[in-house]
Amino acid sequence: MGELPLHGWENFYVILGSSAAALTGLTFIVITISSGEGGSFANSPSARLLGLRAFITPIAVHFCAALWLSVLLSVPGLTVTSLAICLGITGVVGVMYCARVIGWMLKALVNYKPFVEDWIWNAFLPTSAYLCVLVVALMLPTRTLLSLYLVAAVTVLLLFIGIHNAWDVVAWITTERHARRYQRRDTDGSRDSGGSDAPSGDTVAESKGARHSR
Picture (tube, rainbow, N blue to C red):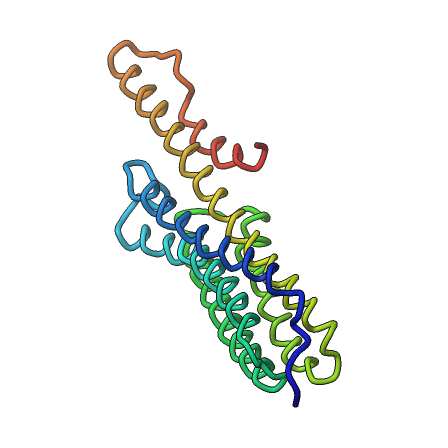
């Protein structure tokens, strides 16, 4: 088949690809914050690794997926057939990875009970995005123009999924660490004087909901 009608999309994918590459650095910031004392899944090394796989590593994966799609749609002389094959492979790999992430999230239930928002942004939306890429690969030969707009929409969605999840993890870690600090202060005060003005141990549980009311 002939070349794709990609004229006019250059600036769009340059902006999107540059943003995805730059925002990948957010993942390193999240990992740095989570590695500190009081970070999420701090109960054991295995629990911390599970939390990293389920909630932090996918952030980098989604940013890289947005970067990959931006690069793919910027290749000169790209044909409908070659793009369909690349999108099909991307969709299959993405769906398989999301299935593994969901499995890790289910295992993480021992240490952390995900909110509905966690399931939406970490499981439902990413899986839907990669499924859409797979569907686009199938419909590309017959509905080329619509497919190009769908790929663009999916790329933007993956970028915003990464941004949201990075912020979500940092916000949760920050509120949990703050709550644990007051919990320790409350415990120490109870031992010394039998009471304290600091918040009670329930603050830890309350902090987990704080990020959803920000």
